[in-house]
Length: 96
Image (cartoon, rainbow, N blue to C red; front, side, top):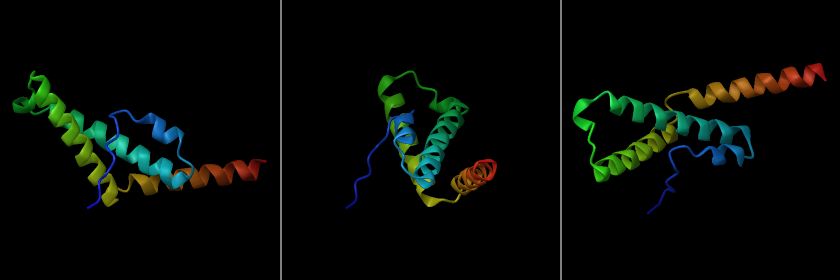
């Protein structure tokens, strides 16, 4: 059984510690999807609970949902970011 590490909602440290462009793109995609899912949930009135336990559970669920969505690589954001990094790197190398 595989246990995934649950990241905090704004896990920007993981992006700073990333060693490769692939890790940066993957972490950014996960953070983006976490924020997207959380904002989408706010639009549903029935989930706008003021109960601390419910909010905590839904936040954890949203983070895990975003992680699964990011792991599926179906969004294409990671590939887009990798392409942008590659293009940027090539342009910087051509200037120098």
